[in-house]
Length: 228
Image 1 (cartoon, rainbow, N blue to C red):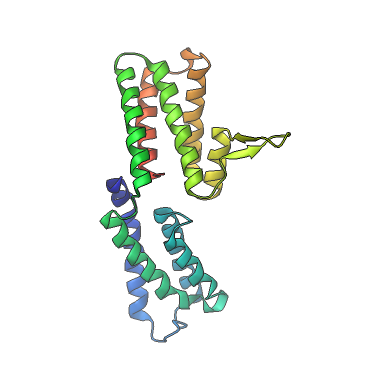
Image 2: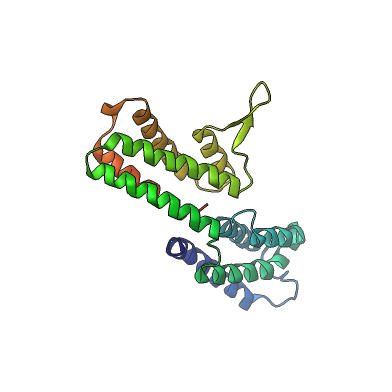
């Protein structure tokens, strides 16, 4: 888990911190008002997006960033630069030290890893169909955990007011719409769920053993990049 964060997130944070240091060398006024407004807003937008991706929109890092932006609206936006820069530095340290990997995330990762190892064994024995169903089940459960982690409801009320679990594709749409992961990831998840559905409904001739192997690799990568 930490390795995935380090590999994927640290380069983004390092680039933004380097940009912050460059702006810091150039500014002369305490309120940073000598920094061009468009340039400041570009840095702030990129910084807040990186903070959300790395720590999650409900994290203390994200809350601090949102507060800094709120306190420096429109023409005073450059004044938020040192605040966002400081948060990025603190976040980088947390990522590099492994502090962002919670006990809950580690538990989920361990459980899901066990199921995916079972799926890998099934594939090696030639049982692509139950493997596809198992991998798809792990993916759907992970989407539900991502919703819970990011404050997105994983249930809905039916016409009788009864709470029911949302379909996997509905959660996929909401997660991508909330920028928990990218639109490209959303399309990939849709394709993975489609393969799972084919396996679950006996349409075994519509996909191959190799596609199930690729499904396993892709879902493993997705779980590592988006821990819940």
